Image (tube, rainbow, N blue to C red; front, top):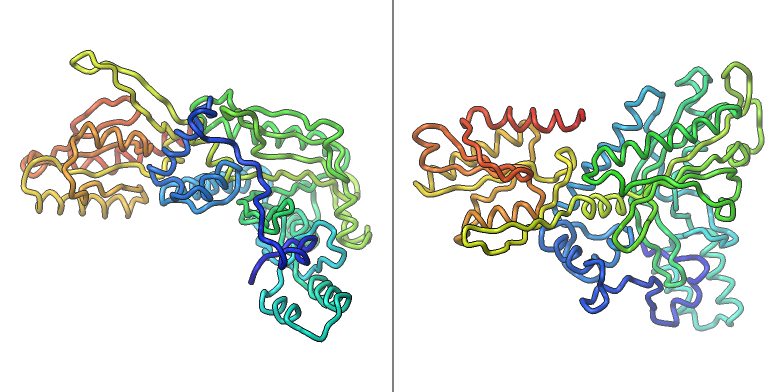
Length: 448
């Protein structure tokens, strides 16, 4: 299957694709915010896969090919988002809707449709068709195509009635979902993918404004919880001229990147117009109880977690300076990601000693960490000689919380050297303590 923007599919077969997005320059002569250095760090430390296409997509807040650490960071972020909305005091249920729907893009009204390339090619290769007939057949193919979702709102509105039995028709309650969505191509013909989160909240008409304020406060608090510099995250009302159709009010959660503020989540007070349209205006099956019978209003919360990943990477990056023993100024880059979000909690390395025996100890620790769901980096598998200073610099840039060194002393006494990313202090701990120490540290950080 190939994706096509239904408005431009006719002409795309006869011209080369042209890039439509205007990417921010990252050349050294036109990079006052250090964007190129930041993006290179993301590539070097396995957050984004190498290649200009991936870094440009990532910088634009769209899904790219992540490296192992970037994929784990996004997974951790989505997991925390899911817990924050489904384990709150309010009733929120998780749902899953198809990325493709049976709804057709009959009028090409801004929807994204998918067609099989072989079907399109078969029509184009028909030699006996006039230009008008060719256009007609392609338009028919487009009209019959399934549409790609651009958000989760429609799916949640469709699931409203089936969900009423869960709450005995009592308001308020919400439906949550996350996954890939697709954005219009902007004329290039290639829709962009983005990882979206969605909370659709159903409440009584008289409380919808208060619920919008409630969720705006909760979402801002959530973003700031994991931030090294919370003030970089803020909320702002959407100007009246930017309100979407069927919305009466909006709030954006934004992050202040070095190049400017960009939205992470958008909240809308949507009224009940779209809910009525979805269910063909049948008030009786939509009415709920909240002191009185009424058709609920909708508050939607939509987030971009690809941009969220970039926001936390940008927010956590610190460039520190210190002098070594020879009074030489050293620069140290550290990704001080929140312990809950950090993709790697501990790195395992070996010092001097019986190499084979030390590796076996590391393998045993690695297995323990896996069982405890503590992500570990197998630095002991590295074959090139590297100083501990170089290893620590590498792990700081990766955002690794602790570096553990197993040495010959470990074989004799069971003692390990543990270095903290945030304090750079080295401590000695017994091998039997390290798993519980890490578990307690991460658990305590999650409760802050």
